[in-house]
Image (cartoon, rainbow, N blue to C red):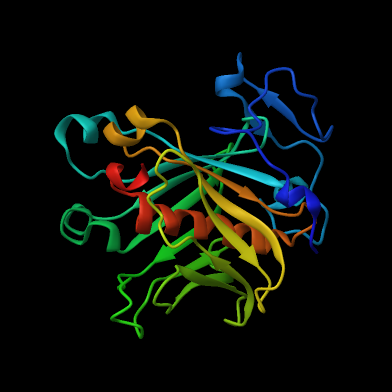
Length: 267
């Protein structure tokens, strides 16, 4: 499962958004007049053994997640629902995620709030649902730590992301639908990311082999201080199971809430 490609260095910022880069797959095409608004459109029908809506993930070894800036929240200083674009390495949007939560939770529970993220493809069809209950994230409450449930398609659970107690490092496990651990994610001791990327390494259960990483890209001092918009990259082997890739997308959302939701935390 391990792949050298998953550990190859990538460019800073939003890697892979390269005008004129060759199309790695001829089974899809794009629409839009420029690289900034390209979206992936389904071409050939998906193979029968892939979950509907997730077939394109089987081709990717890099998934970019870009949080959209909420101007209203910036002006009023209020916490609005998060929205994310999920893109391939060429910067083409493949999915769009919207948080559903009530204002009371966003205001008073802040980054610990319960919410649901609905992920749709470019035709507007919902392909994934991410459910986050209200839980603690302190090492003083080891029995009620963070957890996410990922459904794909909606109504069918494919996996979980569960925080594990550790006094020094942020640690999580990726679990299958039966809540059996299949991979571990280990973050750095400090997640402030001062003038650099923050990497969460994806490891085997025994933590002896690193197979990928989830990176929070540093987007510059001005962007990080004055906005809550974050950019992430999920680096994985292309042949990793699509359900595991879907769970890792959910893990990326969880890390954004836990570590980077407030602008100063993303420096």
